[in-house]
Length: 388
Ligand SMILES: Cc1ncc(COP(=O)(O)O)c(C=O)c1O
Image (cartoon, rainbow, N blue to C red; front, side, top):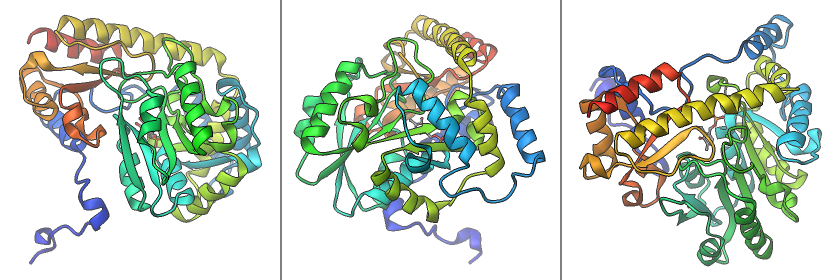
């Protein structure tokens, strides 16, 4: 038997997750030359200041391993950033861990803090790495679904879903894929449940600089929450450098100890020169952040207007860079069929979000479009959708 004919050897834990449907959609999009609004990464380049900072960092000798918790300059810059966006004073040495993207921060937090047999509440639809990471840690997940079209965060439903094994809850705001920015009162209601039940919160805030309606509230900043919250962040979204994979966690020292216990054996550290560039990027960027929101708001409005014209129904996203639509008017049985159909008949690629749900039928009427794209790309997609 040639090595190509060998059956795939995938651990029992990961086998059920299979190949991501995103990989298939992306492959179809490339093969058919579709306008690609599926992937959540920009089709434009990162700003010059961050690219130049990376070149400078490489040329000035930061090319060997850095400290396990992250380069000191970056940890200090994260403290500065947290003061601005989270409204919190944190300690660089004992509360910040720099990781290989937010994806590693999620994995290290789960693997380093939770025990086999613990249970974690996940809000569906949920980013696709949460469930496999929990499975790798032998931790059970229980889903609470946020219902379309409002996708409200229902603290009472979360409370009702908790058992005596529940140890943590995972949230994400601004939210991928719904575009929700949880309100202060939604988060306060959740915080009350977490304090009463002594739960840890994993709060994924990678889109924290992309808010169009309302305000970004870090649940860690609410009373009694800093000591039980891990805030998970990424450089990739804010500075259009998704390929750099620089992320970080912010957590009190007793939780940071667990995160670092896993991080030291998972990756130990991410690209050291890029950490120095990230430190430059995170300092004094008030004007850049205003421009970022202006640019993304323009793209959001353009896409929303076009999708409405093409017959999709949805609530406009309050934050992040995705629009989650109902595709009923396309007449397809589910989201995967609808996305395949859209590539074939309109030449536009979107993401089928059923894999963001424990029960895929809950997402089967939905379709996700990304607007982290050039205006020309969005216009080209809308022109094609308009011909349907
Ligand atoms: C909600 C959410 N969390 C985490 C990530 C991963 O971030 P990173 O690329 O920094 O690993 C993404 C990327 O799409 C995301 O949408």
